[in-house]
Image (cartoon, rainbow, N blue to C red):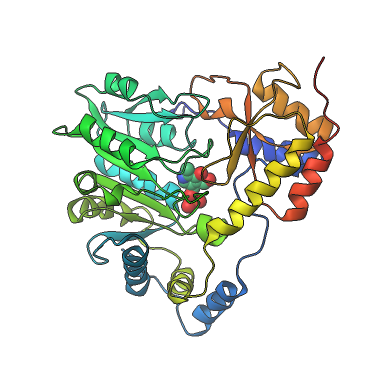
Length: 384
Ligand SMILES: Cc1ncc(COP(=O)(O)O)c(C=O)c1O
């Protein structure tokens, strides 16, 4: 059989490869971005309540009204933003799905969409699956800021979208207000939409504020903002996210969504809506900042180098130039096999495989997981 090649990405993602290698070598898995600590008991109880009180049939296509209302209330409280739950919020089965649906809503075959790399690995195949071309622009190591001149040079008459991500996977970089201003200047008057992947929205550290595309009135008019509950409430396996976009864009988004998933897990939506009402849920960034700090403190026993602490997300990028000059993929495999700690090589987030000799650690793990992993790496030596 001759199957069509819908995209050019590798057959198996690096996350699957590294997790399989971790299992094979009984390694501690600091590779994939998911927490290994439990969800709040109350969230589990609410899920149970939801099924008991009868939230077991299809939810409305845009999502349960109680959940959309609570999201709008939450954004009013946290960001001072007014969002219409009826016409601007759509609940989705995770953010990855929402990214795909948003691209599908706006891309025609032959269009171009810009990705800033290193980038989350679904962006490129999602663009190509729609017959469009992904144009990649590298971020500038070591701080992974945006080189706006390069973005400008990548824009052509065919550019239909740009996807951005703050706080950023894999580098932990966080956009400032001025980044949004630069983007607005670049695409003003052009028929270009913004996909803003903000799944780590509540994970910024050291007092840094998260600036959402929704807080930029001009960009908000042409943006799909994509969120995930999984990264906020430690329940990535629930796969519930949402898209916030102005009414016209929400309309085209729902035209796709209604024939793709149509609706999303009802009891989980109910549980999340009730959970959002609670006033004593501690901000997640406090706990994760403590984990980042503990990780960095313990890692002082190893020869890894850190350009700076992650400003946001679950991830800390580390240099290993004092240990080895292997390419990063080889180094990550070696570390898994020889020291029993799995990480992700940062080159895997570049289409070109650009190798800055960096690996990514996920620090959203239990205290003992982090301590054990560092213990295993503490015998790493500075190479002569
Ligand atoms: C940048 C980024 N976007 C989206 C996602 C996926 O979100 P979801 O699990 O809700 O599909 C991830 C998960 O790792 C991510 O890192």
